[in-house]
Image 1 (cartoon, rainbow, N blue to C red):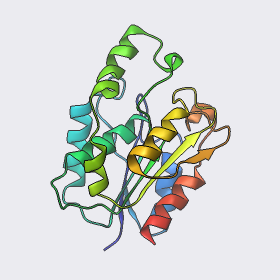
Image 2: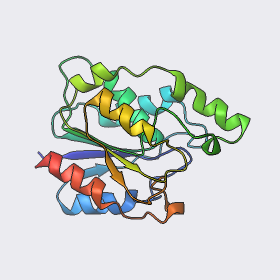
Image 3: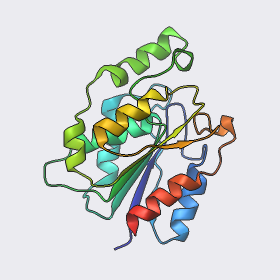
Image 4: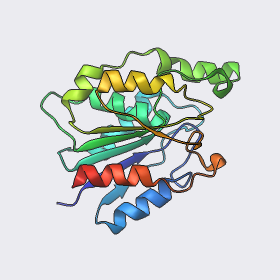
Length: 193
């Protein structure tokens, strides 16, 4: 059975943005089935609707199921994992610019703050997440305008994973000129093999 990889884009983004098309193409070349859905109402992401869509798309999971998230897409994947029944396992998870805090300049307007609030305040069940996979990679940038680098320490502690800190990659967005992300590709391939 070919590995299935689900790539979840970020807030205000689309499947064809950033490094996602490149990663999809690279993984498909390696024999993976890759899904990069257009998440609902991307400008106003809601936990319930994003997790529901991911749940519906993924269907039955096993250890040949992998996930890659970008920014709020990482939160979506984590919240999806904590919703799984006990005993269910996925092959691995790669989180690019994941966050539990956001820098003020990333949510400048009252509307942005309102959208981000549930994502920032709804607790994440880290222990339950760890029961659903043995492989988690986190990738951060040392100059991310949205994610404080201290979040890398939180993910390291909570998920018992060593963060990969990239230099000068911003928020890993197209606006940071990031259209390829070899570290994410390597992380997925290492998990598969």
